[in-house]
Length: 129
Image 1 (cartoon, rainbow, N blue to C red):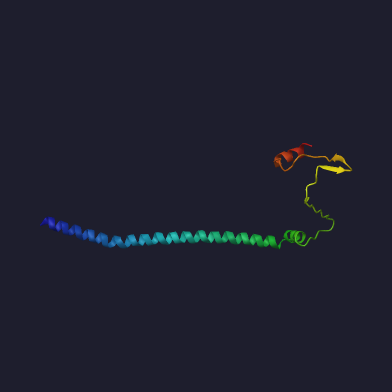
Image 2: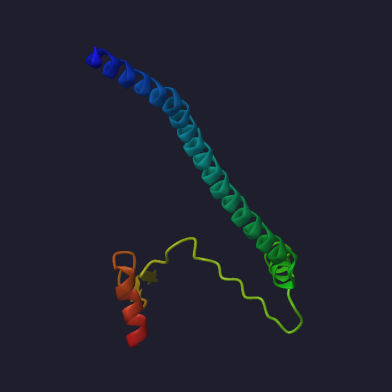
């Protein structure tokens, strides 16, 4: 009889613990989900703030005199007083290294085939001259 009473008391206590622990576990899970959502919203807010700061800086740059001057020079081909404009146009055709005049062959100075040399060698030759 004592064993039955012990088992009954144990089952009542276990039922009480289960009855109170199930809602507590659900609340803990819900709390973790809310905290994760809050963290996601914080990171999103930080991202939006950094984008806003970037856009503010860009707007300030676009309002600056330096930007206006560079647009006027690049797009409108304007210049400041005292500035000289230099236009560099690449050669459309490569000149021949040799020219013939009345049967005679004259050669112009040649620096070799520049397209075959790597850029660092070309710069090295320019610097060392």
